[in-house]
Length: 113
Length: 136
Image (tube, rainbow over the protein chains, first blue to last red):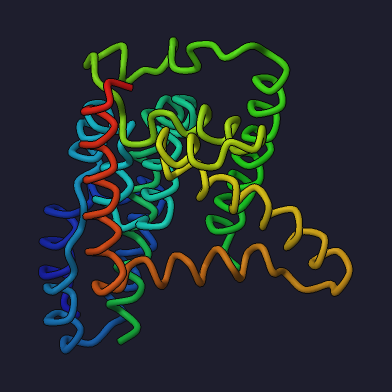
């Protein structure tokens, strides 16, 4: 894939990933062929800041987990009232990192297809 | 199993362990207000979807099945989970497989299917409405 496309992708989407993953992503993209570009466009990445806001407002109901696709954890969180409240608070701190993790997995999945 | 998944399962163990500790702690006490420090209730004034689960579970443990159902059916779900977990864990110790993790990932796969997800959502929501109606 040509570097202009790669840099364009990274400029728009770097914030959805962890800082240390970006060079890795760049190399992967540069090494991939152009057909992957279409595949990449179909990936829906979740904004960590949105996840944080959802977590702060509706974290006790597990909505933050549902939004990033952690359905099982969302159900568990919902049925235990935010893990006795403790999980709710813990997630306020880890939801952004978890969102970036999920985004990275989605990216890798798209690159593999 | 990825590192992320392994960490998630560790938290599942912590959650179940805490459920046992919480239940045991409340078992010896007279029936009190188990939700006095519930974040949701204090913030909104109404019950959260799982309000009354602890009380229902305690009623169940004391043998009052109908009262437990009336309090919150999720208590039965909690009881099943707290029964299944140690059994699966012991099986895992004996057979050197990982039934806990396998069961959890199976459950997660099933719960995403629309034919299960939609009825479950409706059940949870109607239970929640009922809880608020009961004034839990």
